[in-house]
Every structure is written in C-alpha cells, then in structure tokens.
Amino acid sequence: MSDITLILLCAGNSSRFENKVKKQWLRIGKKPLWLKVTNKLSSYAKFDKTIITAHKDEINYMKKFDNNLMYVTGGSTRQESIKNALQEVTTKYVMITDIARACIPKKIIKNLIKNKNKADCIVPYIDVSDTVVYQDQTIQRDDVKLIQTPQLSKTQILKKAIKTDIDFTDDSTAIYNYGASRYFIKGDIKSQKLTYIDDLNKLKCLKPASKDIFIGIGYDIHPFEANKKMFLGGVHIKSDIGFKAHSDGDVLIHSLIDAILGAAQAGDIGEFFPDTDDKYKNIDSKVLLENIKEFIVKVGYQIINIDITIIAQYPKVNSYKKEIQILLAKLLDINPYQINIKATTAEKLGFIGRKEGVAVQTVASLKFYNHKKGQK
Ligand code: ZN
View: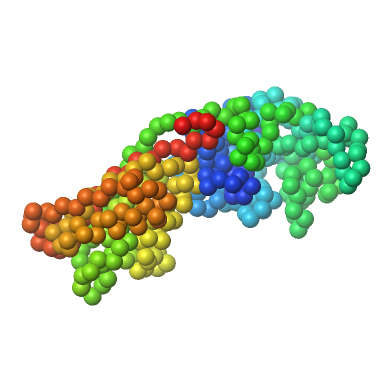
C-alpha cells in the first residue's frame, strides 16, 4: 500500500491560454492531456489513489474516459481546488501537480518520494540562467529559484497551511508561510508549464493530436401541439401548430445536438439538459446548441460537417432550408458549406404521413483541434 495520494489540478479555465480549447483537453495522440499526464505519473510510482480536480461541467465527460479515478469539483482558485481535494485524502503524504506540467520526468517523481522525510514539503526548483533584475536592482541569480510542481507535502500540515485567506500560488509557499519546513530538490526544465499557446511547440513530449475523424448520429421526433410557435433549426416556421415538448420542441436542433455529442462520445442531450429540470422548460433550443458547441470546442473538437434530413409531411420546409443552414452555421461558428440540409416526406405513410409530427435525422463528423504549429 502506498502512503501517498496523487492530486492533479485540472479545474483551471486556461485564462492565459488565449485559445478556445482548454489546455487540459488538447489531444496528445488520441488522449486528452489531463489523462495522458495522469496515466504517466501513475506509472512512475504507486499511489494510494489519484484525485482529479475538474470543472463541474466536465466531470461527467471525464468519467467516460476513466471511471476508476476520483473526480472532485474544483474551486474558483487553485487553492480552493486543493482544499476540496484534500478532503478525500487519507494518506500521510500528498503529491500535487498542475496538469499544465505535461512533461514531468520520472526522476522528479522518484526524487520527491525518496526525500519525503526530509521536510514537511519537498519541492523541485530550477536555477535561473539569465540575469535577474528585481525593482531596478540586478540581484545574485544564484539566490533565485524557480519553483515547480509536483510537490510532495505532509497532508495534515498542508491542510492547516492553506486554511487561510492568503492565496498561494504553490503548496511550498503556503507551508513555509505556516512556519513548517520545505526541502528543495533539483527540478527539470522539461517540467516546464504549458501556460501560453506558444509553449505547445516547446514541449517536446507532446505529440500532435490524432487525425481521427469521429462520426455521430442523432435522431429526434416530436408530435404536433396546437397553439404553439413552431421552430425548426432555430427558424420560426409559419404555422398555427408547434411541437409538443418540454423545451420549444425544435426537433432539428435536438437531433443535431445528439449527432454532435455522439461524435464526441459525450452521451446525449438528456445528460446535458434533463427534461425533468424546470430550467429547461420552454427553453429556446438555440441556447442549448450554443452550450453544446462551446462544450465540444472546449474539450478539443472541431466540426468537419453536418448532414441533416428532415422527414415531414407537414410543414413544407424547402423554402426554409437556406435560412436554417445559415443560422445553424452562425450558431456553430462554422461555414454554411459545412452544413447540408435535406427535406423529405414520409410518402403519407405512418404517423409522419398522417401529419402527426416530424422526425429529423442528423449525421455530424468531428476532428481534434490541431495544437502543433504548421500541422494541417
Ligand atoms: Zn427533442
């Protein structure tokens, strides 16, 4: 049994990253960065358990990648996330790292563990090779240390050290401020943090994203309901009946959402917007689509194309196809030519033929965002 718990901080919102994709979701080959780093560190040493702090909207999706890890909702700051995670730690020691340190060498982990009894917090650092000026004074660079993570702390001491309003940028500073001891070990330039978009090309251990293409299929049906506005693909259709539904009943958007989620292996519309939730009563489905678009971009996908088939005896939708195509492209932030819309009748067969409702079938294809410069 190990007396160390591993915590990976993945709840950050990548504010300095200037990219719509969150860095933790960049694909390294086929795996998201957070999983790649987690798997790598777990292979370097034995841990009692591994805890991932994550944004609450991403935990369900993360579980689809690995259900054996423990996921804890992150806080608004790094320190809040650590506090939440520490509640689940039962071991004497805890190793905490930022997911942005994607290329930590094995020897750092081994060294942290080897030295775990030397102080209350073991912390890797690197020397500064450039001249350092502090408040207009050139200072002895030998006295300057650049602090890295992961750091290995005694759990009980760290818990006490961060029980304060001061927001520390690393555990060792909190521990030092608390009056406990820290011990420095040599870090490694390879443990550099992925902070800015340009760092992506510097980090040698990061492989390009896989060029796989992902296909998803979506299908939805809604019956008609009198005295309701009818929407298809976000466009108001002139009609004195609408669709019966918990939401505005936009059967086209619902089918589209399921196709996109299917391609991203992210479940279905009901997992994101349960129809038991009053929040979504009569909601404009365009809002749901925009939410889903933001989500899939954040977690590393780009849309290649979308193909939609509307199966309707009523209403006649041909004259609306162009308008729907342009609106959907705008909502999804893609070009109209990436969307194709077809309309067909049911040849008067079945419930659609009897004009009782409409069905829509959609296929969507996605690819991973490319993070390596020059890669097409
Ligand atoms: Zn629906």
